[in-house]
Image (cartoon, rainbow, N blue to C red; front, side, top):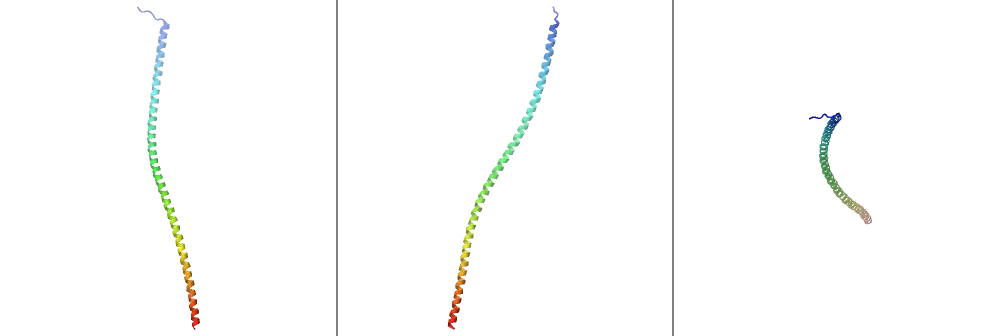
Length: 130
């Protein structure tokens, strides 16, 4: 035999069913929002991975360039040292050359002076002979 249900009970059951539907809809909405957010994070993660790859390649390129520049700088310092030594050698050679020239000039002037003296002496002797 079926007993009639009180109205309060029926209202309570309907209220519970309504709140379950609301809860189910809210849960489904939350799940959808979380899926959308998860997709967004996945896109961001992929973009960041691409950015990371680009930065790694750039870093590698910059590192190679730095090694080349350090090598060039080392070569330039070496060449600078060689040029400084060459300049010092040229200075020494110039000094020696200047000393030789001065000595040669002195010698020439002495020779000219001696020649003049000899010429004067010869003239003097010739005058004495005549």
